[in-house]
Length: 480
Image (cartoon, rainbow, N blue to C red; front, side):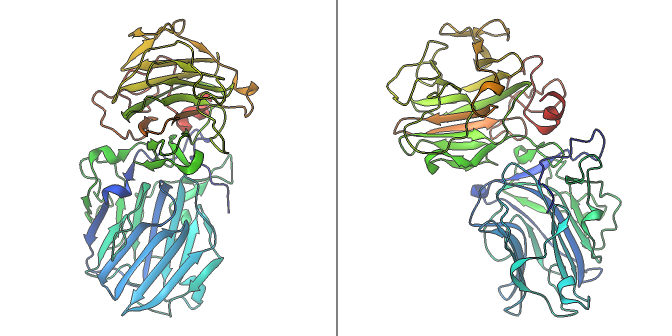
């Protein structure tokens, strides 16, 4: 299988995907429509790009349902891809991969291609991930020749982000959801390998495809109607528990940072809202870090604390939070964080949480938004509260960002133990805290003003300092 890379930005040109849709499984989000008469009930192709949120359990990409005896779904089951079709109560088709798909930092392209009229059983239902066919399955039950597959039947209820017969909602992001009625296509109809980096799979324009009667193309570009079909068929889906704020600019061609549930110190934190909301501190110590680390460039992010704790910390670190012990975000020489209760700077304070930090800013409060500006080119770090930057002497009073005011000198990324910095937040008390991180791709909270960086990327509550950028792969390709 080719390398899973988060975007196609190594190439200057190419097709750009502007939007995706965020599914937060705790909201029971899904889309559905009732199918009409098919072009060919035995031939169809489904293509979708996904970026995973919560791992484990059952997370549904697509399902259909006529009744309890006639249903099917394509899901992540225990992080394996699992396709199952039932006809008259019997399992007619089952494919379960041996591969695990647990990378929450990257986009996967999944194609399900069907023609039950094929003479070779293994060719009737074909599954592809990132341009390569999956040929090894832990369970493989191929449909009989000319079997009515079910995915494309008249009057079925098709569901995006939900199983046909029950809940098991998807968690994460979906982009470029395409269904082709009447053709068994290969991934080359939806993507291509990057001409400069031939192991990288990237999207192409699909608007010229023949979609067939039941075909549709969900591009999620209308925030007021996320289920709008832009294929020309008007096979629109009805959205449930999805809002305009679930439209994301995080996409297969511009991948934004989120928080990483695989880097979960003491495994005590819980994640939601596309891994941009994290509840930390159900044990004595907890902290978490971003999916993308940086080695160069200037970067701006925002973090809103919605449930507070006097021991909450937010900042940067060179190390993903693994291991055991009493490490807090600020223990090490390459951790830099500010504390909720007093705004003190924690850096190299050791493992004793009773150690005090150094005076830097002032306390912040519940629902405050902390801005973080990280300058890896000049080895400086800055913090703001509600758009006002700290002057470094115990207050928040600089309403205009000034690189010479409130700068924290940090170790150059290349000189740290791991050669980079993550954004991070944590807690070292018995109480919990909740952080809503905004890297610009899909804010977990409502943005009242809306501010992008100089290149037009990101959606932030406060102005992005001049020369700083949202943490996404297009900016990384240019500045990182």
